[in-house]
Length: 256
Length: 256
Image (cartoon, each protein chain N blue to C red):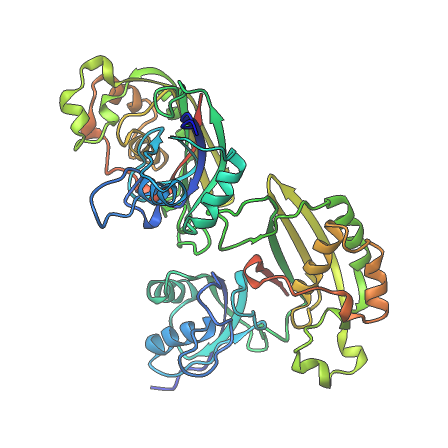
């Protein structure tokens, strides 16, 4: 029997980041989303299969629409694979879709953009029902001010100031490598929940969470909306407070 | 110094039912919401304080607005008590409000009604983000049919058929004791989530979850909308399938 040719499969993944050390497979004893799915793929295909994600998510960050690809020689269709995967994955990971894609499709390099959503619980006391998926911020936020600042962030800018100070990237990147375009940045408030949805062509390490830090500081009047311009122009990381915590962040969608 | 007179306090409570054996204090080794709060009240007031809830919720049922009262001799105001309680309660319980109320106010006997919400995830594959607060029901629901049945449930009826078969209540209740009024019953669909909101003057044991069972059976055409009339009239518990699981149910509000 002739060997079956390798098929390229694309999957969309929902996960809760709480109990994971992020997306990317690391050393032994480190629970990651990629490693959990690769473990099941190995059982299904009886060999090691590499899963290539659209990008990493940090420890604690959630996803509703992470995308990853893997190659396998199989006659099984996507729907059958999805069911087999979901039946074997832990309760904090679920696969929404599995489909055959062109051999040239790559979850990371074919991506045209990403949509993240950051959720803030803005009231004096904590929540039980939303506690795993929102950051409890007890100081009253002025949404109008935050929206003013958001408008100044939209567009193509050098976001070097918003990159994590501990980023290994930072030391090696040239100036142009830190230029990114933010296409949309929408702030919505529903009862006590404030959601910050941000779409860009790509994001630097911890860039979304540092943008949230700045927006919250504008919302509490620690910063003026126009300070955003200064921070961008002067690549001024020092004006930005501590990075907003991971558990408020969710990767909603990868755009192709 | 004269002994301080007892104050009557009313609190509103949010909890996740997952890790509780329901609301009501039971024997040793049984984790209940009432017992957890009473434990903290005992620490704060250095004596045993009884907490009287608006009613029990079963193991696994959640609440956003459970109401309970307790009496204590204290100069502390409600806001201070709320903060002290929340600082000492586990992460699956939080108190929204504590306020002084008239000595005659009673969480259970002063209640004029309750609003429950049942959440169904209606898609073929499970969810991660909503898994603790929704019942995964994979068979396609016809919402129009469900709304027709819902309209027939609204009003004052003998809901004996919807009471749990294992109810100790059932054996001792006279006919009139199983008459309840449903004031509103609204079914909403947003993406894959179907929410069933139901307001009544009171509910029999497991009545809401048995109503959900019937509505789901109507939604999948196992029952006709008009079968609801028959079930009510003939007090026909046999036509109702297995009680819908607890983790989809949430006590939203107690009305006074």
